[in-house]
Image (tube, rainbow, N blue to C red):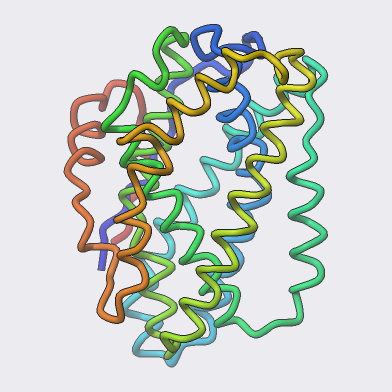
Length: 274
């Protein structure tokens, strides 16, 4: 069980920023923009799935997880709101959010499936976001040259993703979720998540006019495929999820804890799971 704090981030997202907000780097900006474009609909789905999973539990298990789920929902609701503001600035710049439309169609098609499947999908996606989050906290240079307010947004989001990495997984286990379903869903999420994000990244680069520039893809290779890049450098942690005895708490969350401790002036606490 995890104690989760709901925080209000003290950053200004009303002031416009350029499409290449991430240090003027076309790929880094386009990739993080694609991630942000996926967040509002994704985080709403995570909240709904985990709440529905909690409701489906027997009373004793529900009571044991209720506070953790409450904190998870509070954090994800804050992420959804702030990234909706971030995405609103992108929309003003003419960026088209195709990843959201695809996700909504997929969610509608899968809506009739049982609650365990939806919680399994949430747990799998939360594993991805936790891997990316820890990588961001290890590599703040991925935001080099960005305005401090935008650096704070992404690092705060990363810290909270790492902090609540266990919640959906705990609910899935409490529901009696089996290993086979967990891994099958994980493979499905791996393919769809990466394909959707890369497709939106390419769309963003097309809009930016930098899709066919060599330096764009040099930057992309460095960000994602370097020895400790976001994808290549996380392969071992990605594979950990496939172990039968895996639990997200096995991954060290010290960087998340340190960032939240050292940057307490960037947010106010509005609630905490009791």
